[in-house]
Image (cartoon, rainbow, N blue to C red; front, side):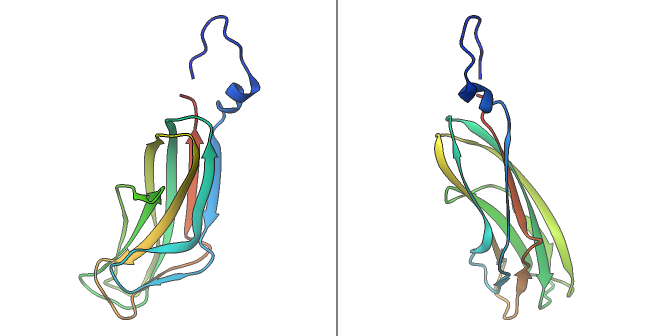
Length: 149
């Protein structure tokens, strides 16, 4: 946001100087058994921006619990913004019956002002009957919006 000499500083302009942070946690475990991505229940944020080209930084933690082992299949987590998949995925090998929290960070720009939805999704890289679970409470999404444009 550019402030030129003589311009009026309004409450709305000042409000946009402060970043806004949102947090959502998984409310029901997702058991993934195929390569088809599914929404992680509760790990979704819908927010409103006031200006076009607001910047976001999203941090996700996927609590991945391997239920069946495989030397070649991975658990994968991703994020979608307004139904478009963001680049980059969180990856966890399923070669041992273990559990881990895997983090991922994304950064991008929201081209238009208005409502935007961020959500986490999980899957496997191939089908596995028992699969792996994205656990509730510790699978979380945090989004920070910067509207200083």
